[in-house]
Amino acid sequence: DQQVKQNSPSLSVQEGRISILNCDYTNSMFDYFLWYKKYPAEGPTFLISISSIKDKNEDGRFTVFLNKSAKHLSLHIVPSQPGDSAVYFCAAKETSGSRLTFGEGTQLTVNP
Amino acid sequence: GAVVSQHPSRVICKSGTSVKIECRSLDFQATTMFWYRQFPKQSLMLMATSNEGSKATYEQGVEKDKFLINHASLTLSTLTVTSAHPEDSSFYICSALAGAAYEQYFGPGTRLTVT
Image (cartoon, rainbow over all chains, first blue to last red; front, side):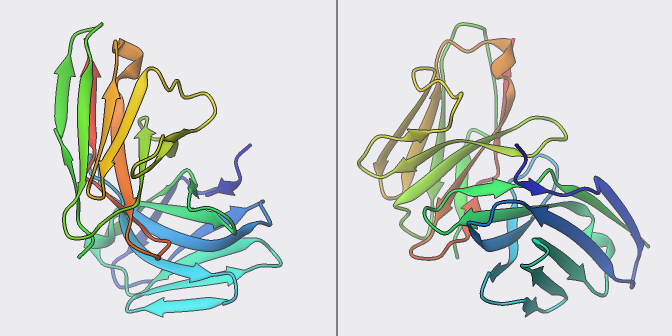
């Protein structure tokens, strides 16, 4: 039972353009969402998060949007840079507890 | 801030031996640490949640006698893979919660290869 799904295994974008990474979830008890970036053979790096009481959170080039009714969130990166090339994981936390449920990841490639 | 280290970064061991992996929070105290494993091109699978001073909580399907977790201090948790077999070969990653925040900070991971 995959409660957090990232349906696009890969995404390719030109440098300077916008990258949009999508994530869907099924568990209504999720109340906090996070995005992580991961390079091969390294641990994930925290990027940005959003609480379920908000619909948008922005931090520099990164913006996360949350649509609770659709159980969908997205990460926008603008402008995209070649150094953004990595696997991006969406994660979600339930109201009670601290464990995270991760999506399968999306490989982003930003072409110069 | 919020730096987590893991040691070793790579380890190769023979089948039947045990391997210990250390996870340390370097600049903060972590009451809760987590252990994950990741197979190639797959997501991170939570193995167990480790709370300082108490027994770890294991996810369904994870053998607690095989994957021993000890969280002896607020900055150190260890995962021991006992009687390792080739199917235990994987990338093991730990993470830690910093205070009241929900963000988990991850270590760099440990590549375990069992021959």
